[in-house]
Figure 1 (tube, rainbow, N blue to C red):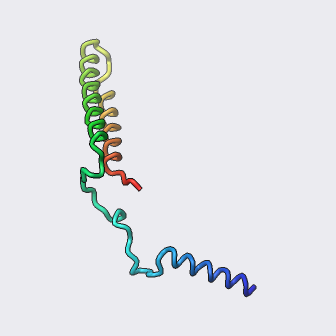
Figure 2: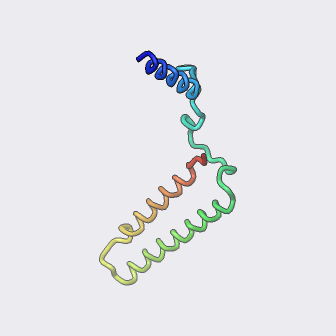
Figure 3: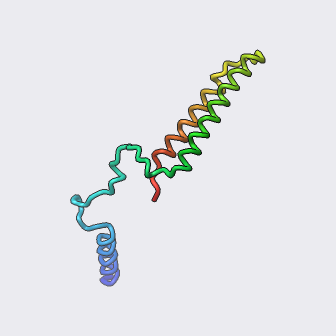
Length: 102
C-alpha cells in the first residue's frame, strides 16, 4: 500500500515536471491566444498560386453556371448552385489560410 502511494506520488511529480510545475504562472503557447494575422512566410509561394488559380476556376465555373441556367431556361435559380460552391470554397480557403503547421 505504501509502495503504491509512493508510485502515485512519483508519477504526479513526473507529470508536474513534464507539464511545467509553475501552476498559474505557467505561460501558454502563443498560438492559443494568437489573433489571425496574414503572414506571407507561412504559406509557400506555389501554394498561394494554386489557391489563386483554384479561385479563378471556381469563379469561371460560377459564371458558366449562371449563363447556362439562364440560357437553357432551367427552373432553378443559379444561386442554389453558386451559393454553396462559393461558401465551401471560402471555408476551405479560410481553413487553409489560418492553419498552423506543427
